[in-house]
Amino acid sequence: MIWTTILAVLIGIIYPIYFLLTYKKTNNSIKQDDKIRLIDYKQTITIFWGLTILILINFYTTQLPQLNLYPNFTIISIVFSVLALAFMIVQYKQSNITSASLAIVKAKMKETYRYLPKTKKEFYWFIMLSISAGICEEIIFRLFLFEFLKENANLLIAFILTNIIFSITHIGMGKQNMIASFILGFLFSAIYYFTENIWIAVLLHIAIDINSGILGYRMNNLEQKIMENPNG
Image 1 (cartoon, rainbow, N blue to C red):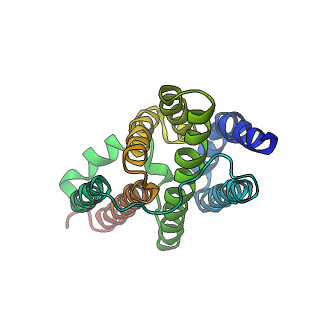
Image 2 (cartoon, rainbow, N blue to C red; image 1 turned 135 degrees about the horizontal axis):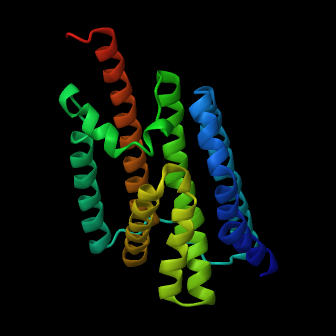
């Protein structure tokens, strides 16, 4: 139990504090040098998998808390899966952008645009980051932290506190993104709680992140084309 508690403190307290202390420096570094963006992708992937591996080692050695890693194919799980798939399709179609809508979309994404991929290499790494975030963050927050708080406090505290911490770790993407992260985190928690199938939340999480990367990459490419051919 002691190792599980230490891990919960690491994820619930130290991990969000790390983001609170470093996000301004990271954002300023990316503004000054685009190369930092790719470095940050790689560092974030390393942190995600490092914490996830610690959680899995802890689970297989202590069985605390109980982590439901296996897909659960119930009727409600299938319904949520279909709804998640429909959402992914709609979201992907909405990622199409034109020169007329570029300025509007960029203004809406002003806090997150700098972090999104601009080159093909960055885009490939962002895909890996999105997959890592979908798998690792759902294991870190929904499986481990949510279950730990549910077992040691109560369900309401587990729902609220898990997603407050989840949103804090997205502070680098701006205040609006923090609010969106809290809402999405709450949705992921609800999906996991009612379906007992973490993989629906994982796939939805991955799809949302990848779609953001696609949108950012397309915006940058379109912006470059407009600059090269302003009369086109």
